Length: 303
Picture (cartoon, rainbow, N blue to C red):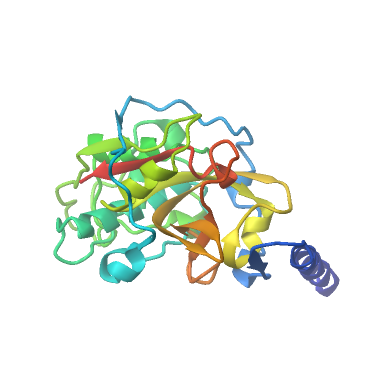
């Protein structure tokens, strides 16, 4: 067992050594103890295609105002930490969209004054109660963030205080609950009103995302590569490692450092990873869909 553990640790450190010696790299890497066993989180087991499933329903398209220019930088976490500085942890369930979208829903309701104090809403309720069986498992099926928002529009959810997130620990889902965890009655379901598609395939979406961010956070998808697990700080660009699959995250701001433009993104891997649970990623990349396709599938909802 000691030999196996040593070999695993050495392999992780070898990746960090490779990254540290790449000329011109704009970010720092480290071995995160919490991520050593996360390389097998289901997002890398089931779905390898970079083509996402077709959305269930059409959504309204966001149109940037040509005469309106967004500020040079924006950061919801600094501007309103009471509403937005809550970092979720996906754990051992591959339902990343449920976890990320529900966190964004909680953020947005707080921003809009729908909840006097921020209320954490339940990804477990969505995970267990979605009538689409493709959305009710922990096996890593990459449901687009739009699907998760559609559930909140069509069905709704309850606070996590009623139905807590358990699948991150167990790696399994359950039946749609008929009562809260403590046996009390399920309260009235809280819904979103409308979902707006911010990004358009085959187009540069940078200005649209920037303008939308002024209204609140934007949910997005990210094509994960192996090196992201080792991200510690800086402006991430994919440099090394294999494809791992789709995951979900949330735009919360943008800026520029040393002439390099970036998005600030809230991840779902807990506070112990990255820049206190967040990462910065290259903004406006010439690659299709942006760096790691983060500018490809992004939406914002009205609550």
